[in-house]
Length: 157
Image 1 (cartoon, rainbow, N blue to C red):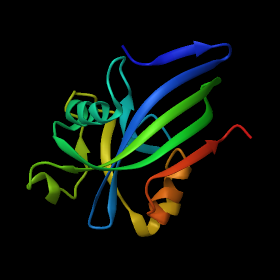
Image 2 (image 1 turned 45 degrees about the horizontal axis):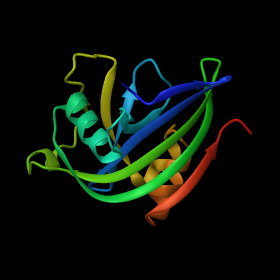
Image 3 (image 1 turned 180 degrees about the horizontal axis):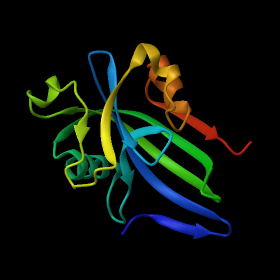
Image 4 (image 1 turned 180 degrees about the vertical axis):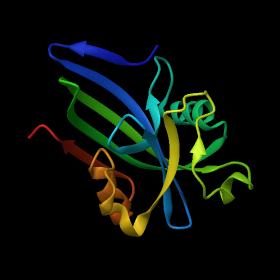
């Protein structure tokens, strides 16, 4: 069960994301029904730590195993989506694909769960400002490359 709790007029999410970088590009998630990119990952399940979450999510979504290589950030994220307010705590890890052949992938990766609207794309780090990547503070983190870091993203101000 995901750690998502309704509190007054907010939804509280505990989420974990992962940054996988190769050839000066970062792998991100894109939903065809959405206007932005996001890090791979998902909601932490009860009794699961954030490292386990990103490993599970990447396998479920791409079929590829990763190994955690570091800790990048904790992000407090406040935003609205579809008329609902969110307070999200996101733990961001750095990882690499385990298999050498997976480390050479440069093309878009399709979702292995059969969800045609989901795909995984590589964004050029030199052009990161040009992409609609959320939360916005991920762009700062990727440009600064100083880890670990605590960031607050407040789209509601």
